[in-house]
Length: 88
Image 1 (cartoon, rainbow, N blue to C red):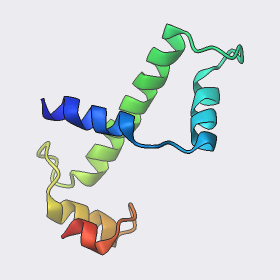
Image 2 (spheres, rainbow, N blue to C red):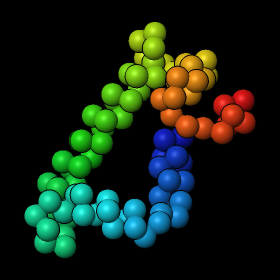
Image 3 (tube, helix red, strand yellow):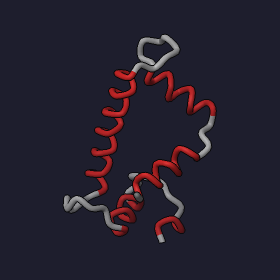
């Protein structure tokens, strides 16, 4: 239920037109103006691999969980940018 709510929230967030076009072009590898199911699956698998690598980078003790302290350390080391109040 929480994951579905998170996905719904993400889908409702406004996406800048330029980002939408860039994303579409990156998935439309044949440059047909259409995205096939295979294109879509490949893009999702690629993003999944990227997310897993990012997760492992943040999960410094490799326990399969990211703590707030690990996020703060990653932020302090410049691994990602966040407003300080977002990490409180």
